[in-house]
Image 1 (cartoon, helix red, strand yellow):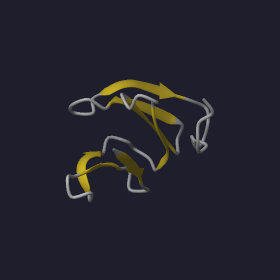
Image 2 (cartoon, rainbow, N blue to C red):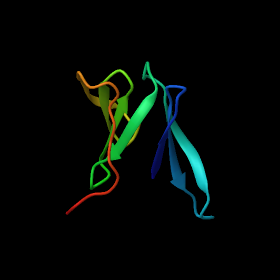
Image 3 (tube, rainbow, N blue to C red):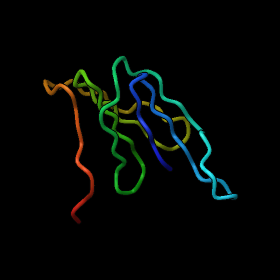
Image 4 (cartoon, helix red, strand yellow):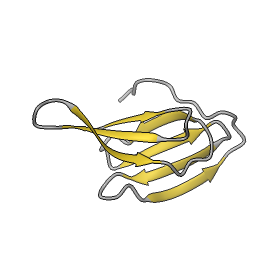
Length: 86
């Protein structure tokens, strides 16, 4: 599963099909601002989405990508760093 955010307030979710090609399988359009950060949990069970106004939404990735939590922060914009140190 791959998540791609854009400046049109949309997060696109792609999965890899049996032909090894990416397919758009979900669009999350309820953000009101430009997407600036995306991060999956290590187990892939949740997706955090940060936007340019400091709002973070956490989605359950099982099923219909329902919103689990919404956080408001003072950070403008939310950003993320690449990689994990385990």
